[in-house]
Image 1 (cartoon, rainbow, N blue to C red):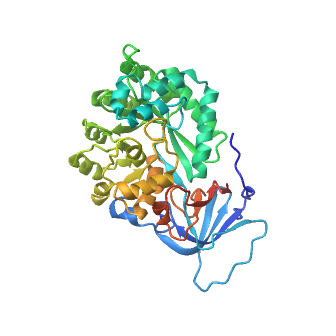
Image 2: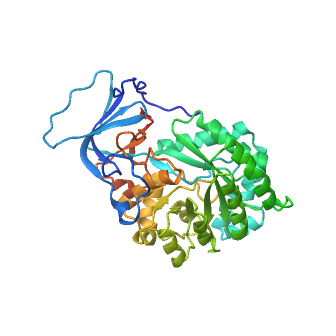
Image 3: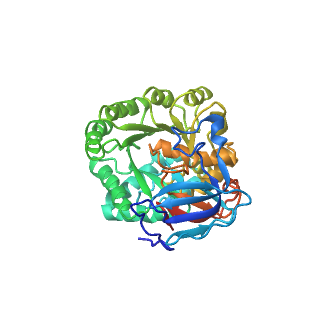
Length: 428
């Protein structure tokens, strides 16, 4: 396991006495009145960060207890006995980044595949030849549970240091009940040593394993109930694309998941618009992810629904230069999240700060909208109400930036704009 550096504050006392105070910060709260936002930010509301120019943030244990606004003529406060203090010196304090779409649990390498794509071979052609997802599937099946968990933990620690305090992790490289469960258990095992939060998602409809007779039916009939029994309420995901799962196959999978009380998310329209957006909206999907090839009509329908769109600009940056129309979704009043899509093939990116920078440049978002799309909204994709904002009761997952202007998060790239990461009230 990679070791974290820096002192750790003591646990919160029973009285709620502050254990950590961050002083003199420019606080990006993402909350208008200090309470948890009821849902995701939508439309023009995504640009409203609700910044407090100067404040002290008090933390007890793993929770924010108070945000004290400081006037321009306020005198310095005396240090609190027995309390760890960090002087922000006017720099930005913002919620920890939430990465709501990753495939960070894997084995093997896809460097050879990248070299093929660099020479012009299309990704779908590589997939047809047994490469792409299926190459990782073979490596995952050969890996042990411990190997998968150790690899995931190493990546997650790296992502935490780059600001991602909450990370969703999909299965999907097993394609058998045993191997999908092995991946989900690897997430649980890694979580035991990870300071932040890893959220598992059962990506049961990823690729089609042609070597298994009746593969789609077996996953739907056999794998979904096993996952539901051990991971109640987990979200089930699928990749709807040519050469992968069809709309009809996804609908059957999701119908079975719904019957067992599981949530639904879907990869749709990465390369082709096949009708999955309309089907997913009809089923009340929590999110629809990718959206690069989505039609104007489907994007409008998504914007008018309760479903959150999740866009993955690192994928376009690494593969084919195509990006989803984030500006259009926001202008139509939609709720948008962004994520790294970290995986061994199409998006080898663990930095949500870079994803924010890409979203500003290629999705048409303002820096403020991109920050909302990387904090509050992805937390809502994962059903987490206690993070993605800063106020009393929020989990103390916060980032201290190197800059005094939050726009720097979308401006800089290639280096980390983050000075300190604080997760669960602990300074890393």
